[in-house]
Length: 319
Image (tube, rainbow, N blue to C red; front, side, top):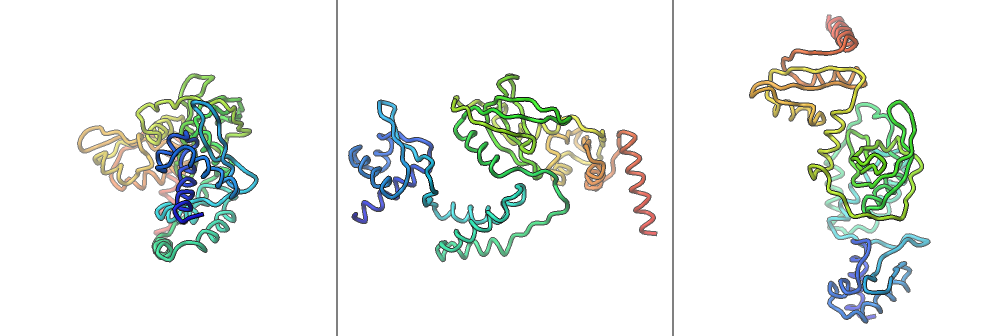
């Protein structure tokens, strides 16, 4: 095999890894070869153990399929650095992935070119993370991966979902995006049974199953998945109500409490309303303390009782 042929074969592999399916004409055009030469290159990949499926006909094409083993992946410089850094932080919102991430990281770092190893080392020595408290339930990596594939392929899935009260129902949905919010993962999907957009917490999803039916992608309201999920989360019912009228501009408060998203609404140029409602009383207290400015509070009796008790303990501690 000549060096040109080797380079072309590697380029072909890289292209197959970037898209679920390619037409023969598109692949040949990207490689600058004839369709006949493309077929020979595809055969070479198969001989090397890469499971390349093909379909005949006018709409036929090529795709990498799952095999009995994981063949080597091709990463460019930026992708290699991104994967290495991601592996070092992968355990933050996932459960049971720590050991797997470290093993994969060791393999990747072993083959990194020297020029990239320096970049990765600089990032690793410059970045650090702090965990102030347990964030509760975390996502299963296998579930996250399965849903990511369904989102990519626009494939309808079925699953069971438990609501806030623990009631489980069967769902059939068109998955769209996965969104991380404060350590919790959410699936943004169009619920077919309810004919509406819904967000599903991944730790409440069980028994997901692909249906094999793919559909055209839907347009997300507002065209911003993260903003849509943030809006739904801010509008979700909470156990305790706490709304503060803050004597500061909305932009100033938003810069300090970005996670509140749409819960911050301007009243005028010098004040805003902050909805600090939550299911967890300590989080309400943390949010209000973080405002770091004067405000008036409209809250449930349980919230006021908790805040008074917290203030008394603080005053007692400082003498």
